[in-house]
Length: 196
Ligand code: GRF
Image (cartoon, rainbow, N blue to C red; front, side, top):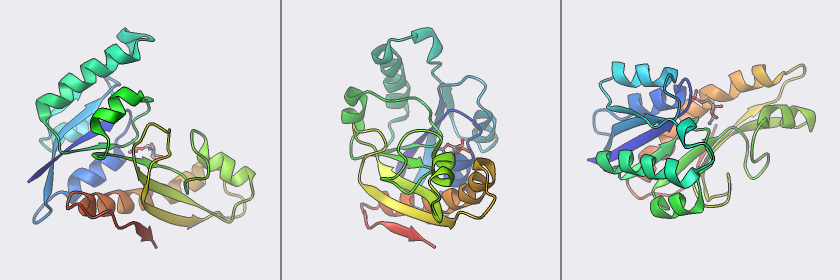
């Protein structure tokens, strides 16, 4: 049985979708939900599902990214994950940390990569007048939001959309896409998933 650690910073809706998908004949189970934010809403959702949780608050480490990541690594090694899923995890990871987990770490990003790396993705798609938007699951590499794409889901951008209405259309697709990609990834299948 493969072990999956999920890193969150907020509500953890993607974590819930991933955790709830790992049942029955699924070849993986969640082994840890870790947040850098002590009161992240997702922690209670994980605990309610009986998933071990941990907090590594980044604030005490101030600018010392390496020290924060040292604490992160210690918590992760306790759980001994085979795969790490970043799911609404809002810290930028250094190349050192990424190299340690490269090939075993995924992220979901709310845009059709390679478009709109970074933040405010929905506002930028609307601003650009794009007819479509969506989300991407990719392997995490040292280039921010730049690793190999393992899946994408597309939604229309509708007239009058705001970043919030577009986000609300994309998020349910994230909850379909990420579990779909993870199920393949844990079996070593990197064939990209495209929805719809
Ligand atoms: C989502 O937009 C996701 O694309 C991004 O973080 C946001 C919140 O995710 N990675 P969640 O509800 O905390 O999973």
